[in-house]
Image (cartoon, rainbow, N blue to C red; front, side, top):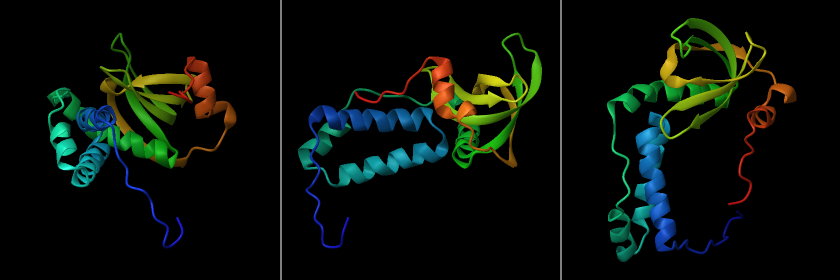
Length: 172
């Protein structure tokens, strides 16, 4: 915005406000510490500028995401992997397959996905030379390496989404 520009105040409908409250609660409950903290701070800022009636309404939402010890244990790993995705850094995983067998994988992280009960890391696996999804709850150890992941369209996010048959929603 240019200096002196004025932005009209935002006004939310009841449903939009509840969606923001519920979204912040879900982020607080299911995301890493960094996004959880940001969701709480954003909600405080939103509520600070709401008219009293809407502020009371936001506090009355009956949709909750209670904390759980299992999710709390994954928060640090989520933050670490989120940072690796953002920084485009190679990640080394000690990973347990469904049958319990352990393997070490060097992966090029592309995205994090939450499936309602489990987080996965979508990545290009250098061992398998293909896209793979790795469950965070099956990672015995993770290390973000100093190696930068080069831009490669064939191993990038769009190629991964196409390989998984998942196109990001462009319109709601």
